[in-house]
Image (cartoon, rainbow, N blue to C red; front, side, top):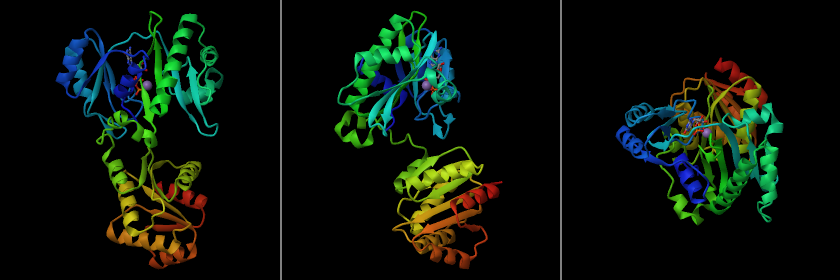
Length: 379
Ligand code: GDP
Ligand code: MN
């Protein structure tokens, strides 16, 4: 479960990680009142469960309560990658001398927590990792030993922090972040940017916290923070129907069964030069009902073509083909659908599709051929 920035900051505050003082607001009037109460310059921040708010115009400075009201009016209702802004966080504006990056995640392959720190913050961390990996300090923490003070010093030093006073503050923040993460059973705690003020004080200017869903029953106070309206309508629909759906930026809809197959389908489509618009994992399901649901979710995005990639294990190819044909009888889909069926009873499925001879179904034998075809059809 992802926390909103303001919820993450409340958590940080509880663990004594320095954050700015702020207030929640849901209307321009509330934003004005919050700004008046805080005094001085404030920053009006969209509260949505997605990153890159700054670039999308969801974060703006305001010098006066009047201006805060105006900025709030501009940001409320804004669509940031499918997330409509309904809540704001108004906080006292910080002066920024430098922007750093600090995060704590899980490295599943090492079965340990992983700290990442760099003084090259403020931009996408993927960019730092690609451009200057030597500037990104990576440190694993053995859960049985815990986070040690010498590790905090190593992290600061290796990440490029020279100033002793800043090193001390970073060590304290990292130690508290580790404690917060362990106690709340977080999967991710990210501070980007972790700023230095002109006075040399470190402070978390952003907070991205993900709590392990499987641990939520142990944390009723955190579970309560979930906002049922946070999901875009399509994701809510997918969730209700028991489908795993993720929205992306391209124009090819992807439907597959099983997370592994869907992930590799995305890769192969990218390799063929295409860009997925989304993907939907129907799991083990191949009944018409489930396929209709998946196609409904997928075609709610502007897709130019669909790749239907099913590998039959327990699911049988014939059943999948019948499900797809029945689904197409029940809903009108104008875009081409490239179908790759393999595994159990794939021949039967392919035969049924060939017999039906629907004009917008394009069968392909392999995943790579299917990917190339769908990219071609999407134009
Ligand atoms: P994100 O774009 O969703 O990651 O949102 P952030 O909370 O990280 O804010 C994006 C950027 O807005 C930061 O990197 C800062 O440059 C800027 N920003 C946010 N808060 C303040 C502030 O209090 N003062 C100033 N000067 N800039 C801020
Ligand atoms: Mn940020």
